[in-house]
Amino acid sequence: MNETKILIIEDDIDINQSLASFLKTQGYHVETCPSAEVGHEWMKKNSTDLILLDLMLPGENGFGMLPSVVGI
Image (cartoon, rainbow, N blue to C red; front, side):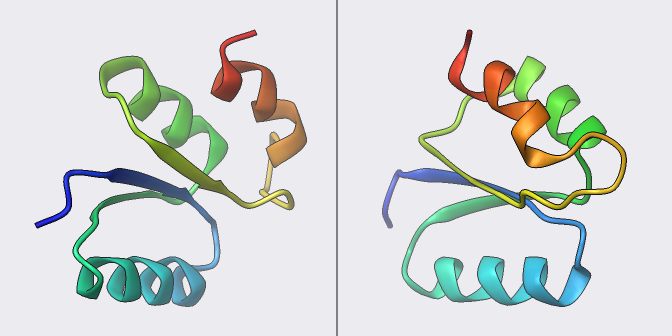
């Protein structure tokens, strides 16, 4: 199994589940978050190798999350 950890931050449940299912079949470890708020909380407690970030999230959008995602 691939040790690469991918975090998907996507509010559309169908897109979120489709991406996660596909990536899991490719051997990746995948976590999902339905909002920027949940994504922030997840990132405080966990590490990841790659984040797939929706730019059009409700509340705080993906552009607003970028500084915390890249550690600025």
